[in-house]
Length: 73
Image 1 (tube, helix red, strand yellow):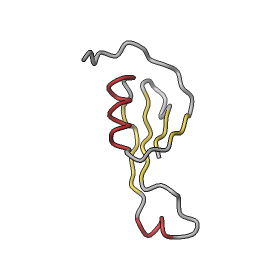
Image 2 (cartoon, rainbow, N blue to C red):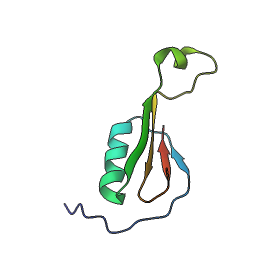
Image 3 (cartoon, rainbow, N blue to C red):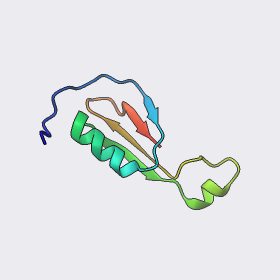
C-alpha cells in the first residue's frame, strides 16, 4: 500500500459524525495527510444532561496551516 500523500484538498470547516473516531482520524491522516490539532473526550455526565452534546469525543484535523479543515464527532 502506498502511504505517500499525493493530494492536499482544501476543505473548509467540514464536520463528520462517526462511530469510530480513531479509525477516521487514522484514515484521513494516511490518505490526506491530516494531523490532529485538537482532540477531546466529553465527560459522560455532560452527555447525560439534556443540553449535553450527542457525541462522546471530537477531533479537529488539518493538512495545512489552518487550525482545522475537518472536525470528527
